[in-house]
Image (cartoon, rainbow, N blue to C red):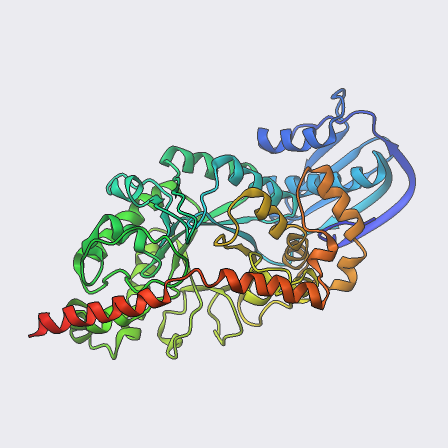
Length: 497
């Protein structure tokens, strides 16, 4: 029996259960989860033949399946166990054409967090698109949806206290050189709908409010949020922007807390992401407000200022019952960040006992071309040492403008993330033997995927896919940043004189 992810144990016995119909007994599953399962099976519903037993000795996401010639019994202590048992049964039914061998399965995950991140900041994905990914997360036994909602190129969540964030910040005039406007945002009602739908599939939602960098869309709406206020548009090119939030101003701190308050109301789960990566310090080094803050707090420099700010935001999140995460980034004094501020950890970095989710750039940045990150490379990645809570596939969308592209970048790589997250490790040798089944199963679920040749390209294909990606990378504003930096330096010089 080929299963992705692998189960802890499976014992095949003699005898067959022939299923001409499917009917679920009394259970704790949501209506959407039941509908998803029954729709996949597409069988008549007659008398009950899948029964659920509550066994309190089992862990939260643990389950057991017992198939006899008369029925299927699912044992669990939670709705999560019931849901994951059904995901396993889907794969078994598909492979056996509903002539199921009598068997016993015992299964539970190794990692607490098994995540998938969708970046809706660069390209907006509709509510139905988001729900698609939630269903496929459940199919792969993933349990944390990381929702990247604020970016330089677009603000995607309604904040009632600051209406310009969506009225202005959700639309950019063009994307690089294509001259076509792009926009979209989620109303608060739509956010609640998405969160509720995720909960129906036992998935928690971790929103991301990316600060103090990646904030041009907010600055375009409220110019005073930056160090040197001037009229700036929502960013329409990729790349790191040098205008970031001015954390030397009390008014900026007030803005951040007010936005967080509305986030907290919409996202009840305990995880929260506060960004923290790619924060150029050019403006802070020249800004009288930031320099005054550094002096008043007895800080060493602008890097210290960011550490102070991230700790401050983390503390505010903690007061509201949130475990906050930020992207690991290249600061020499990382150790001065409070150790309860978790990382989404992108590369090897000594983090001591700091909690982190493994989001390896070299294995799990699934937006990157397969020439950079092959399926084999994703499968062979070993989770980083330390206080690792789990793993996460991260789908950035600078070069993923629609669902067709999103699915091709996600599948088949999500199989490797699923295997590692659930089993604690994976290998290409094991996964390779299941690829024939997996591709057929993706087809049964009407999913678009990269072919195995595309997912594991030869050297020539890998070279050209990398070349194409690097050509696209030219769509940034490096030269403009240089001119802007000089312009700000002149303003700062005039202000001082």
